[in-house]
Amino acid sequence: MDQTESYPVKLYIYDMSRGMARQLSPLMLGRQLDGIWHTAIVIHGQEFFFVGQGINNCPPGSTPLGQPGSVVDLGSTEVSAELFMEYLMSLAVSTYGRDTYNLFEHNCNTFSDEVAQFLTGKKIPSYITDLPSDVLSTPFGQILRPLLDSIVINPGGSNITGQR
Image 1 (cartoon, rainbow, N blue to C red):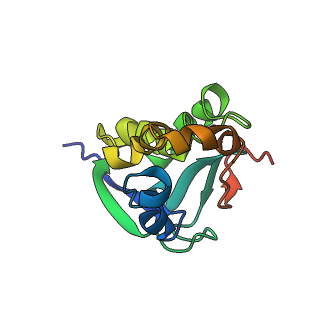
Image 2: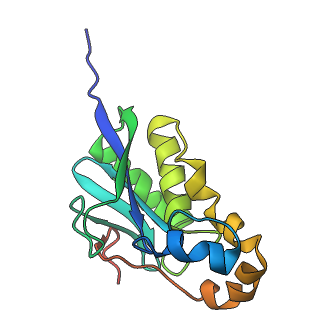
């Protein structure tokens, strides 16, 4: 009988505000935010994430962000490392290429959500994917949008296409 390998899939969650969102959001936004989330998918011994330079990877937990604040077990997949890299290269060309990053609409969390669904059929937690609309639904979020639209998050790592 043919046996298929199974590979664990993890979601690494980092709070870019390092706790400041929890303290300041009630004053600034009029609502509680628990963090400003950066996420990455960990599979096949690597951490994969989307930044302004495209899709990057590094050994798990080795970005300047340090260790993740939390890790969510998304389950497992039968997608091999070779097939996964082919999939990521196609995303790098079609959807998550260099200079396509947008803090509110096309970011590390939309990437993690899409990749998680490809690998496991599961979405990442909605408190992460809903954060941009939560911020923009406030008057202060609307005032800050032009400034925030110009921000590109780049926690390091190597671009999978070899571009910089």
